[in-house]
Amino acid sequence: MKFTYKTVLATGMLLGIIAASTALLQAQTSDAEKSPMPPFVTSAEPAVTGVNHVLKATYISTCLPGCTTFAIGAGTAVPLDAVTTINCPAKAGKTCTITDDAWIELENPTAGANPEALGFYLDGNDADFLYNGGAGTPSASRFDGLAQKTAVATGVSPGSHTVQTLTYSIFGANASGWTATYRVYVP
Image 1 (spheres, rainbow, N blue to C red):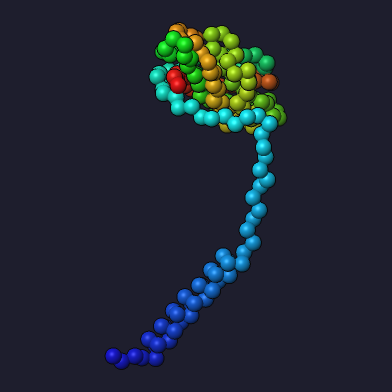
Image 2: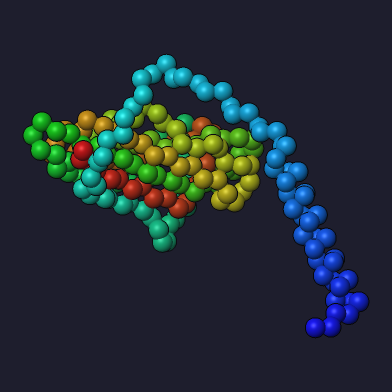
């Protein structure tokens, strides 16, 4: 086999590049300082063990497609959907867990931050006592804000119940697209 000067030179350059890459990689990984782990914070509350739940029903309320724009008055709770009757199929002595995954598209016609919120109502009462879910819409006259929330109600007794999602705005806003998805689980 006959080797030319060009073949030897090309092979030498290739081996040099491989050697330099290997040395660089070793330098980056072997002596690099490891970033410290963030401090572990112990909760004052006891740890909660997850419980396997079985999905029994899903109820979806939405205006999609074809949503119309509506106003949310300043400081006024506005229902997104009609009251929906759901069923908790738990056996006697057992309970259900009901969740509400909701979102709403918003337009903030006022200047500055305007916090938006979503509330989950079960049997006419605020189910999770946290009327939140929105970071506020940007200041603009277009639909560019989104409030979203997952609410959970546990210990719901067997039988029929009503659910509904309401929205709220500190300074008022316009809204368009929205969906509320209710799920019923039994442990």
